[in-house]
Every structure is written in C-alpha cells, then in structure tokens.
Image (tube, rainbow, N blue to C red; front, top):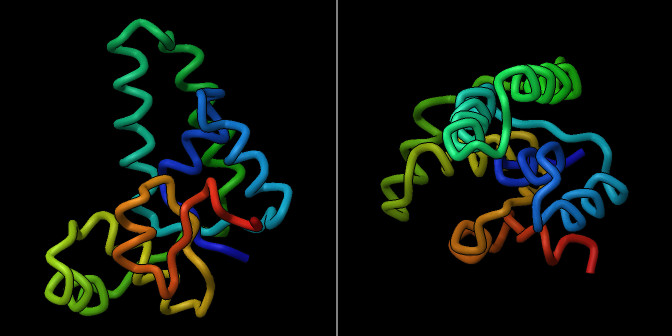
Length: 133
C-alpha cells in the first residue's frame, strides 16, 4: 500500500506524457490510498482538460467515475493538526501536506508527481518517476 497524490492518479487515468510512470507505480504497488482531498483536486484537473478542449463532458464524467470507483474504500480523512504541523515546518501548501500527513499516519510511502514534494519530504515521499528504481 502507498499513498499517491493527484498527479499520479491523473497521470494514470488521463493518458498523458507521464502515464507510463503512473502505470509502473501501479504495477509495483496496486494498492493506492489518498486523502479525500484527491477528489476535488482531480475534478480541477478534469476541468482544465475540458476547458482546453482536450476532454469533453461525457469523457470527463466517465473518467471521474472510473477513478472514484478505483479509490473507493481507500480514501482517508486527515487530521488537521498533522497537516498544519507539516505546513509550519516547511511552509508548503496544506494540499500537498495532506498527502504527506496521510503517508506518515499510515506508515507508508507517498508517491508523488511533484518533484518538489519528493525533495522536501524525502524521508517519506518519492517521485513517481523514481518509484521502484
């Protein structure tokens, strides 16, 4: 089991340049978990694809449904104090710190599509391009 951030989930479902890396992460560890926040972030990604004309409404709804089904039962609430402790220590966004806090709470790795997060939280986070290598 690993925590994955929205970048990894989006790369897996949207078939973009980073999709091969996300597929490799899934092959190496198919049990993905995330804070409930991932849903809102994923919807924002879908909105961007719709706004740019790369994805229509029906396809966006279909992808969202598939992604949400795949994560059902693997979504967690994160303690505010844990998130804010990480924010206070690093000054990083509370959004990214939710994923880190969940990984810490569960005692597992965070696989992220954000190299800055991987660097900033190198003790627990790893870039998806590096996972398993």
